Image (tube, rainbow, N blue to C red; front, side, top):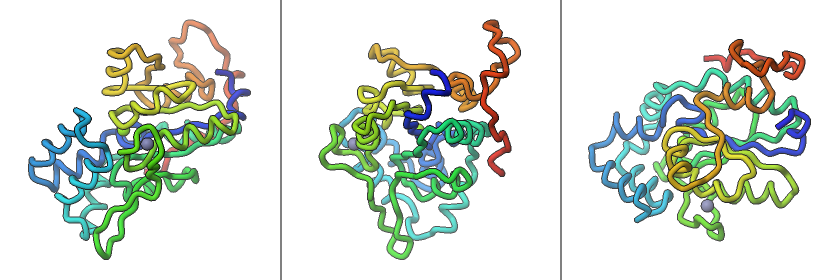
Length: 240
Ligand SMILES: [Mg+2]
Ligand SMILES: [Zn+2]
């Protein structure tokens, strides 16, 4: 895709394992819950329960009113250092960018605060420890989701936007049938291969930026694409 087309494009970024270097929810469970959470995760992986049910059951195993502890454990996982380059490049090229995370949610807004893009995810009332889902969509094709990824993609498409989704995991599968371009890695890429779903592979968000013409290709790029193709982007690091 040429940078010119990004003006009419909406880009959706998963958070856990896509912006963050590994899944923060899994890390919280590994650090703070007993192994019972793996049985819950297994039910979700086998589609016995939806993601909302999965997240609520797992949240029940965490010390859900201990905000300071949960936040400090969540901060043990960093973010892809190319996140800022990708998002800044997209915004400068005129794209809409949204972070959409179907997880516990509480750690996402702070992690991407410097990017100044909308975040769709779950919310925690720290006084009661109650987890809620302001972006659930009971009418979507994956109505058992916590934070719906399909609904915002479809809303953008209905406004005539080209849609791009960047993700890595099980909760990203449902959007595959609804996006124009799917960037996938890890679990999501394996699922795409097994199900003949077209996707563009990536390892880091820098790969996505380069694929979208937002950053200079690596020196080894045999296509010889020139630096003039890349718009001026602020490549300052995300500040951590
Ligand atoms: Mg993920
Ligand atoms: Zn949904």
